[in-house]
Length: 261
Image 1 (cartoon, helix red, strand yellow):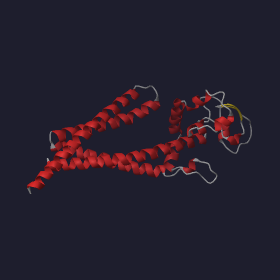
Image 2: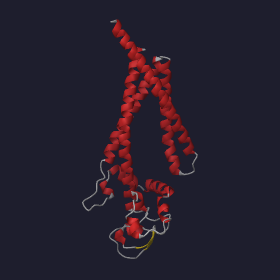
Image 3: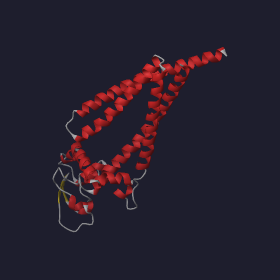
Image 4: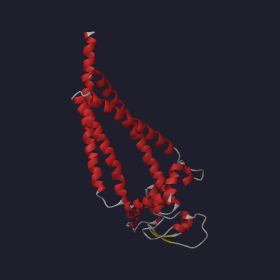
């Protein structure tokens, strides 16, 4: 019995040490996220500010959780540990729900039989996001601010062959150039001599040599944006798998410390 009691004491102490170390690290990460969030919030563009808001929220939640866990484990205050465990449980469940949602949303996006991607290849939720004029106006502003097309326009010596055989991102391919179906004559990147006619592809009539317009209103641009978004979401899903595991281990350690204190 004495050995069992000693073993439980060692486990309890180990869990407390584990909580102290990892909550201290979490607090440091939260501080950095908050600093980055407030730094971005000082920007004067919608895109930068839209990123800063969730960053500040995440940083604040992590900071509160880590402080509760740190004080509760160091001072062996079970009330704080109980609150810490409840918040940690809610955060973990929320992360699991979001991850499942991301998997469902990003599951569609395969290439159709003709080798092309269209909006119909993506989930209804993603389609609605880009088909809404209000949403697309904001997304388009962000794409323009990213200057992905401006980078191409500066490569004035690039030939048409080099352009279409270079490693363009999905957004550059869909937003910065007209479709080959249009039959426009290449001048230089983002500059084409257009022709009049009845086009089978409605994007052809939406193309403009104006740097602020280009093909930002084309379906190809929306498809390119969704393609990159889908890849980003799948990356987030993989990252979340790690964080969920980490939070689960942290929750178990906190629960053991709570029971043994």
